Every structure is written in C-alpha cells, then in structure tokens.
Length: 423
Image 1 (spheres, rainbow, N blue to C red):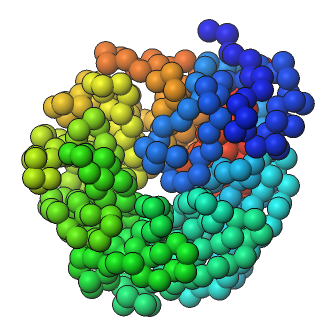
Image 2 (image 1 turned 120 degrees about the vertical axis):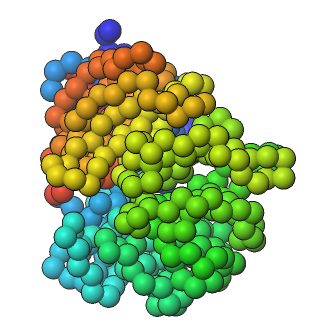
C-alpha cells in the first residue's frame, strides 16, 4: 500500500507543527492525522495506547527529523501544545530535570532541575514515571517519589511533595514508577504508604485531597474508566487490583491479584465492559462489574504474563498482549487474545527481550516498538500475525513512544528522537 501524504491539519495543530509540515509538503510519510491530537500523558490522551493517527505502511529507511542527547531515564516523552517534554536524571548528580523542546525542531525551550535523595538500580538511575500535561501545568513523579507541579510556559516549579518521606513509604527496588493521573482538579499517584497507598493532591496548591488504603505500591499506573454509569479509578497495588471512587478515594472492591515478586508493572485497561489486569508471575485476569459495582471474574489465563508492556484492545473481539518471563535468556512474545475468554489465538515469538510497546491507530493498525529499537506496523487479524513494515529506528529503549501530529517521538538510552517514516 502506498504511504499517504500529510498536508495541513486541523486548526488545533500548534503553530510549530504547521511550520514544520509546510517545509515537508509532498513528503511521503507513514501517518495521516485524522484529527490533530496531542499525546499529553502516559499511554496517550485516553491512557489506553490509542492514537488518532492513521498508520500506513512505509518503505525505505526511517526519516529522523531531529535527534538530541538527553539524560538518563525510562520516562516516556509526552507532546502538548507544540512541545515535547521529557523527565530525566541530571548527569552525575542526585537530581532530576524536566525539559521542554520545540516539537518541530528539537530546540530546548526550558529546563528545570531539582535535587532528590540517593538512588541506585541495576537498570539505571533515572526517573521511570511519565509526565502529564494539562491546563497549563505539568506533573511528574520522580524515581524517589518526588511529585512536582511545573508551570508549562516557563518550567517554574509551582509545588512539590516528597511523598515517600511525607507518607512514610518505602521505595521500590527499581524505584517509584507511577505516572500521574489527572481527575478534574486532582492529580493521583501510587505512593504505597500506610493509609496512603494512593494519594490525590489538588492541582492548584498541592494540598492533599484524599489518601486511601494500606497497600504497598507497585510499578503500575492507575486509570479512570466509565462503567455502570459512574467513573471509577482502577489501580494495581501489591495487594491486588483495586477499584476506588476518584472523588473521595473510597474503596469499592479489591481483587487479589498478587505478584510473587511485587513486580506488577502493567497498566490496567478497559476491554469493552471488562477490566484486564496482568503481572509477570500471576498471569492475566478479566474482571466485570455487577450492578452494585462489585467485581465478577470473567476469565483468568496464567500463561499471559505481561511484564511491563500494557495490552491494547483491537476491535471488539481481540486484545494484543506482549508477555515475558524471568528465566534467561529474556524473551517477549506477542499474542492475539480473545477478549471474552482470555484464550490465546496465535503467538508471534521473540518480539523483544523484556519489552515491546504497542500503539493502536485510528485505522486499527498497531505500531510495536521493541526494546531492541525496531518499529513494526501490524495489520490486526484474529487468525495470524500480519507484518506490514519494519525498521530499526533507535537504540535500546524501555520507554513508550508518543504518536502526535503525524510524528513519532521516542527516547532510547541516549537520545530523544522525532521520527517520520517515509521515502
């Protein structure tokens, strides 16, 4: 199939993108923007790995429009209002920084750093959680549990909380990894303290709005879902999958999804009317709600051991899942799974080592970024694996890419890149 040609987008497109696209008029690229849309938080604007971009097959080598060196970390880039934001460690220091870059050129707009406590890990010293941008503010959660609120325009720090110290919570072995979740005028993170497993802060002044549960934290991030006529918050703690009222923190129920190694890292997702949650030793489970907003186990599959790749629903019947194991050598496998039963329909082996990220486009096609730096375009099919295009786009990466305004933004171990696959 011939790649589509990107021309001007809707009036919502920030000015820097219009300028960049004007220069590239007539270039064959791999995406069409059905509607210009930012990628302003973890897993995209709906926090479900879905994009408004239409992904089309590409040919030839990837076009890297710009590449810049950045600090250490596994935090993913986000895109909002013509800028790319990235949270990293300050080289050689016990400090972290948030940097803003022009999305069209990669030029630095501002950088703001702050000190943190000591942290070491066999998998790097940088932050893991991904920033959230909304209403002129940016929220980050650092690897030592520092929650920060920045002014989007100039990077000024508006307020901060050292949450692990404030709520007497122990850090995780690989560091705090939750990506902040916005709900109305609240920002919610998983802290893991006694009486403060999850904590909501007012976005305006940082005051504590509510705190809930005694569960220790995991590496997972919470989501919001509209089910049974109400909005509920779902989070994966060390003690299970919990369902809370995002207004008050009141617990509705807890399903005992317990990982033997406390390594739950995937984000729960909504599959129609089913919540899917997974961990590397437990496997995966599908949960439905009854009329009283209590849970019913729909299915469980112990072989679907997602490590830290979040599953992606494709159509009404299928969900694509990347699983991994802990035994050497590390290998990840891609599965097409029946949403109603949890049955594996087919498997594509060795799609990465520990990890591969998935993004679903507006035309239902999937982009998969392996931790080896290979980007693949997949045509969904319930019977077999169908690969349309594949390219090496970056070095080793565990960060999730961002799809926005006809570009892919990604970071590897050393650089932040803006990629346009075309010819």
